[in-house]
Image (cartoon, rainbow, N blue to C red; front, top):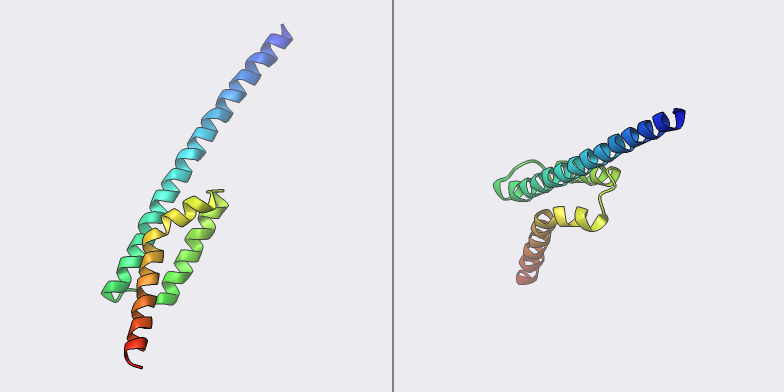
Length: 103
């Protein structure tokens, strides 16, 4: 009789753990999507004379650390930064070509 009670408790605990894992998975997805939106916003803000670059870099580092803390794979973190990284690359290319054309 005691063994059956223990098995029932174990099954209930296993169910709770599975539910918790599912909730954590959903929270990771929400964090990833939210971070992607924030990175995209930071990328476009530069075009409209938004916050200083140093502030955006600090926020980007915080978002990256948050995603790493949630054990989100590095490839997924990089994917969330796509627009932000493209904007940085575009800015650097524009500076490079401006310097080259004025030599």
